View 1: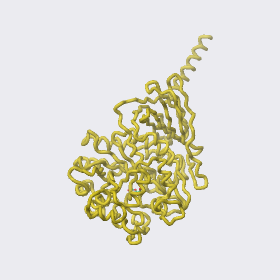
View 2: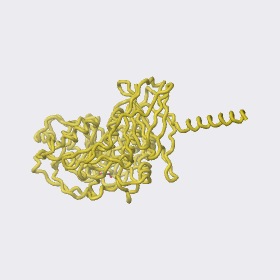
View 3: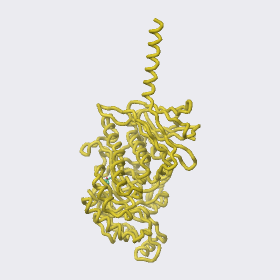
Length: 515
Ligand code: AHR
């Protein structure tokens, strides 16, 4: 009898141990000296002339009662500075291939109008132009990323834009810039050669676009690219690998600074679902589409490696984020949507993917910055709020220009309706001061997950943490309740015998700082 009880006890105890081990995910973080630096430009943003992004968003005009600097809202500038915004892409998007920059310089009252044909058909007065944008970037301390017009522009027009913004000597365009009140050139480094050339940028084939690219890239610079321009090719639509292959094969690498990739997390383009009023099914499908980014980056990288094994050309994911139906009652062409904990989880896991691919992904731009798609900032007249996505971006600033610490782990699964996704996403880095940061996302809508990290190798003794979570997935900030979602101190971890044990609640984003 005693023997039987003993066997029962051992069986029960061992069984529990096995279960406990199974339920804890072991994360291994390597302190590898030759790992890449996470380029801070991965944390870039995008401001298109679309809906209330520029007009009625960033730009209210210098006669507005809303506090502004040369017409740009001071509260937006302050919020973006907190994000250490590294770069800002402008003026599109689809709008870029309809935009003629010369219409946006000189006295505002003399500027011609432009009909924004892609986005709501509104008539714009061109009061926000090149000077306004580049001065805004200076105010923000962000690198400007200008998208040139290839679809309906000319080679001369783009070459002139480069001369206008970048040339310090005497020339027709630099003289014009001086006449317009700006003596020193801005020295814009990042230049997109068209946008979505396969679609709104001209419905080109990859082969045709390559010819256009080579021509535009040639006249923007000189033999040696002495201006140090990073010329960026309009990239593929999600999984169009043939597009990337054709670009990499047929554009001389010395003319190619970056290759774009666009990918939106969307449930179904015909039925995108509401930004706030959604069920777990829609959450799961959004995350499935978002997490496809891992496969996209891996496969596009493999193609780029074939032609550029030294990884000189950057992958630039210059449009990413969630795309839902517009908020009820708003202009369908304005793409205004709310931002919930779903968006926070999406942002955290996508940024982890970019961090982990820092060897090739060296810039990315969330679509978009203010009042459009997965915005970090929403405005309603004089009011401004920041979204859950904003908070994730802020929590992740610790990774800017830090050295990647490669992570390996087998993620538990998040199962819904017989389909599965990895429940956990993670990335880690070490900054210039030796601080280690680990960002963890639990994608699972229902279950917390436990993680264990052996910290001996990393020499970690003290840990602190921040968490972004809420009681409901659909929770979000509103103009009446702007701080419903905000980061909080996180204490759900302990160090035991050289192991850091962490519990990550369902649909939450955690960033740990360790030293
Ligand atoms: O971000 C909105 C639009 O999405 C952009 O204008 C275009 O490039 C993409 O299709």
